[in-house]
Length: 272
Ligand SMILES: Nc1ncnc2c1ncn2[C@@H]1O[C@H](COP(=O)(O)OP(=O)(O)O)[C@@H](O)[C@H]1O
Ligand SMILES: [Mg+2]
Image 1: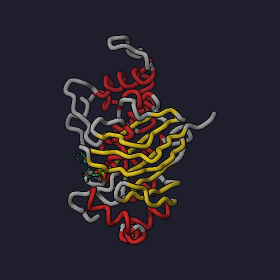
Image 2 (image 1 turned 30 degrees about the horizontal axis):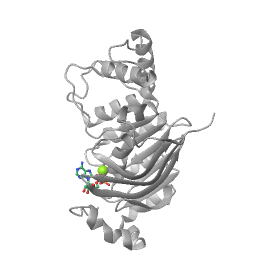
Image 3 (image 1 turned 180 degrees about the vertical axis):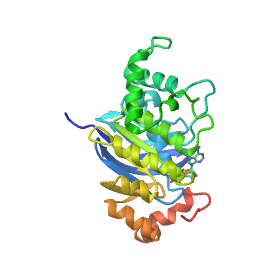
């Protein structure tokens, strides 16, 4: 089996007509784990949203391709069908929709790209068997599937939902924007163990995080550093470690041009 590749070339993205990403190159193969780090406001989440096809993030140049097929003009659903998965940072609460209902719709749509609105869902028995086995493997209590989606979910439960989605949808490329604020230790453990169980030759992972534990548990083969809307350095897991230990001062010194451009992108330098 040949492995798929997600190729991002000279990607330029604007938000409200303001250029944020200014030429990002990144290539991720199925089976690889990449970490994306960088100071606050450098454009990491913007990259994640642009990859997912969020309408607010306008691609003004460059390309996003999966196995040579351009995603630029595709909406979020079409991208998901080509194997892209983005864990949204602001999961919506949908009263009356249970976790299992939501997943059954998502899985059905993903596996039957030509399905019309109102056509049948994946057979209940088959779906339940699959969901139960995935939840067992992840150590999630069966009761969780009966909860209302995101209704009163703790940080850890939101992450559990994200990981179950990953397990059921089996994307080729998972983009996980795990901002560190709001990730309590339970949530970090859920994400760490989940990615660890689910990643493998079939999944390429881009983890956006500063969290040491996440990256220790899921050692990235590649660490990328973003500064002012560009990836300025790429290294191995050692680079992530160095950034944890010493912060971004060294990166700014090594890339004075981008460091000077930070003020054009970040309205208030957060100083991380
Ligand atoms: N939804 C948005 N609305 C307005 N500005 C945004 C939005 N998303 C990103 N930006 C702009 O892009 C810059 C980079 O933000 P972001 O991609 O969230 O950085 P990071 O995730 O690296 O902290 C922000 O400083 C802001 O100016
Ligand atoms: Mg962010």
